[in-house]
Image (cartoon, rainbow, N blue to C red):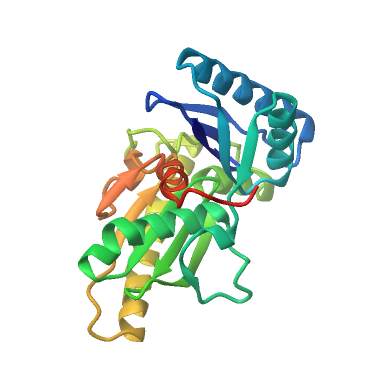
Length: 267
């Protein structure tokens, strides 16, 4: 039985046979090979136990944007005699209008492909895939199925770190960017003001980028219907982005995309 695995800068995730998702926090430093080795070992043990309960043989289909995590999982899988396939750009059936075409995160590409396949193509329109993780990304596919490109912005968590590192008097605040709650816009102290500004600033940036991207797609293809919008990633259901208009929201959309790919990808 093939298990979909999504290795990102925020978390390592795997879809289990009963539909549950195991999610392990990624290291604070995505280049930390030792920490990734521990995470990979735990992920492999969880998958082995799940497959054993179902009397299945586990294989892995992996999408990774973290080289250290990919290498750690490759090694852990080999040590456990579990076959592992890594999804590459060439495995995703979308035409790429990028320069150069191979330079795109596999998570962005998978989300864009599935958003277009499920919500764009059936109604002969394009799609805008929004991924909400360590980075906030927008990836645009036109109605003919051509990936045009997009935009990348810092997540609320990264914005919090940047403000703390760049301003002597500002503290590092804990931003729970996946929380369904959202505090008021007027903070009564510095910590509350940072939370209000960071989360609402991210929402405003995304709202503007989606609108402007849709406008640019229409400019390039006059008469095209308004593209579908799909929100994915850990914060897809969070309170701070709840007012963003979307056709679909799914925190585990990349895992779904991995499982929806054609049967064979590269080892």
